[in-house]
Image (tube, rainbow, N blue to C red; front, side, top):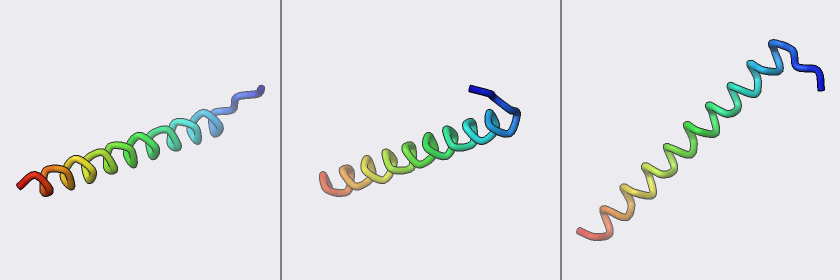
Length: 38
């Protein structure tokens, strides 16, 4: 598999987007559980 700079940059960007969305979803789920307790 030939890895170009653009390919590496694209993969890093996608990985960062997935990590950001995962963190955002975890924050929303955690906040939702906190509201249900009170």
